Length: 477
Ligand code: NAD
Image 1 (spheres, protein in one colour):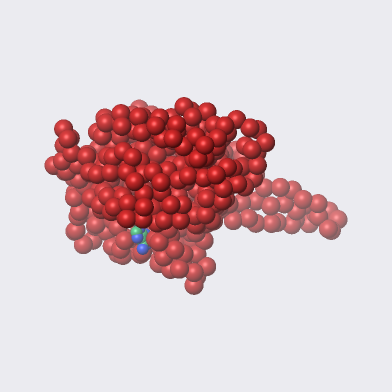
Image 2 (cartoon, rainbow, N blue to C red):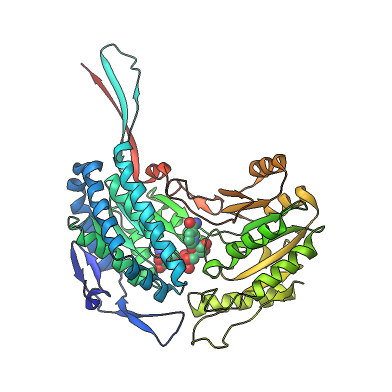
């Protein structure tokens, strides 16, 4: 794909400008003088064209069967492997994450497509006993139909991949609406599918923001919407689709805790907390944003934590946040937390020294944070970590579960019985013991509890419960 086509939509196998001709600039958050390009600002007519193209392509794509469909995924995997550095550079430039983090994301996207293609030979149903004689009864999976895939900016390649790959393998055709903050990664991913010779209309890309997302959710030919993003938008999508019983898969926010008990290995706990809280500048749904520390080890833990965090250099060790709105949200949250009684242990403001003109926030640790204050309860999605005191294991679990989200939960303790009890009691989907609270794996379900998730998980074989519906069949012979 030439650079001139980067800003276009991909509909029915063709790169096309939006019907309105409108575009929006894509600016690097690491240096706002770096204008990456102008990308389609699509609306209802573009989405409708894309859904029509996907609907037209569906019968043949469905008839192809999963094993043949997987061959396209294998080709895409090879194409991305070959251009891995281009993908990493694009991700880093438009999303802002460090190049090494972007390379990690490319690896993760490759693991997902590899796992998904391998699943082609395992899309099984079951044979069951029949009530009647000379009868065979069994179940099988049928693809859902046209699906809408709406994604955020924080993993602009991996999250689209963990929707596009299973959607296509299952036999669905798709309209992909990425975040307006990371359109280039989406264009490169779509280009890889186009270069793999995917039949026209099987995967369509519509760039844009709310208008395009709303049109996709509202199009009656869309049988399911897989969405990753914020809770308020997830709720809107659920409401918009409710009257036609739209199938949804909603992967939402988090307010994830690391619990550090009195017997914890403090050095390990500090390293894991720093990685979980400040990797990708805290812009991960599973990012550590609370560390709940037993008062008996609080001072020792804080001293080590502050030493580690003070050494992180913005721009080198920690990336900027994605846009001005996110930066201001972080800075406002820090101010409100102080009004609620928290104290800044390190960081607390915008970082500018020796940096290009970008959206850098100092890695920030807040101490003495009241467990029920806004900063301890609501997602920040930035490099701001709250340290909350607790008195023993029960109190740690109570505080951990006090939030409305439930993405990941992590505990540091040496006691095996306490580890297992914590795993029973965490109200969260992805659990960790004595290791960082972040990490997603192609073969494990990616999911949350409570308001972090609605519908079947992503990744893992559980993903088929979103992209397919069950059929039962009885044959009397
Ligand atoms: P967002 O909700 O603002 O936007 C997500 C996507 O939805 C974008 O593509 C946007 O254009 C689109 N959109 C916005 N309004 C819409 C509407 N009314 N109808 C349809 N589509 C609409 O989220 P964001 O700022 O891009 O991403 C950050 C959020 O994503 C955080 O809350 C984070 O926790 C969450 N997230 C969750 C996971 C997970 O797996 N649970 C993973 C990554 C990020």
